[in-house]
Image (cartoon, rainbow, N blue to C red; front, side):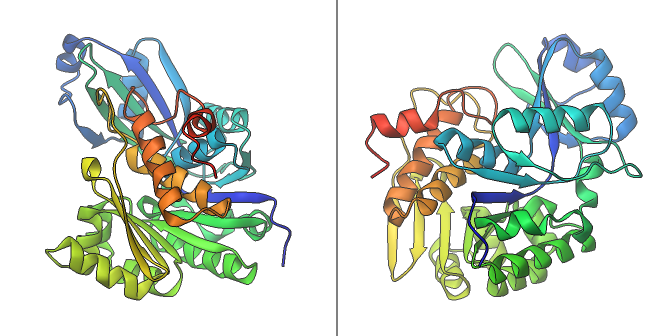
Length: 332
């Protein structure tokens, strides 16, 4: 068995988040629906980027956000995701390295440009997101870093990436490598529309490869085609070791290992931006698991991280999660 030098290695979309403030007139001028997310092509991404004002540019994507949260707790992490050999690929690489996260995926030279999400924030705090998925969705088995996977305690897979056949093959390869090295495989379902498009393949992945599944209420009921949260939780329990199910302000429910544990949401004075709540909950939970904590303690770390990230704009913690957890005596 390989030496475990990483607590968690994440595999997901490598997206550069570009966050800029704007007024309502900018949205009107560019025919953008305030508060919504839409997919755009490379040409529109370039035009909109050119029109935006000063921006913060940093590494993003669902699992990349979770990995940044893990790093904030003090975990040793790696990330695997596809970028192009271009300006934004360099930004992604530099930024994720600045967090102390290992990232060795070779940039693609014959693919679409690096993915980016152009986020426009109006004075009322609303975020209007324009996402170009670019090179990230062309992830394939050849992008895998077998040595990094073999050195992880947990390998964390992003459901958003599970859209094309090469990415599906890459996930199965990653799971096989992880199991051979004695690592746990965690999966986030990411989005009910992803689940609906690929339900049979997701069900097979959960049943055969995933030890730990993260999902919100809508995602898990969509996966099992049931109307009741309790029915979905029971079904998940038959397929995996742990199902970690979030319910927004109602907290979370963890089923598995012979128990069902309910964890309340952490109180937040004001929800500023719910983006990233699930990603950061997963960060806290996975950090707890790597430290040998029980599932209730893991859930409380998840709630802490989710509460921090929804208290400000952006999907990355602005306060050290380790410091917050130590102040609450949550690290055991």
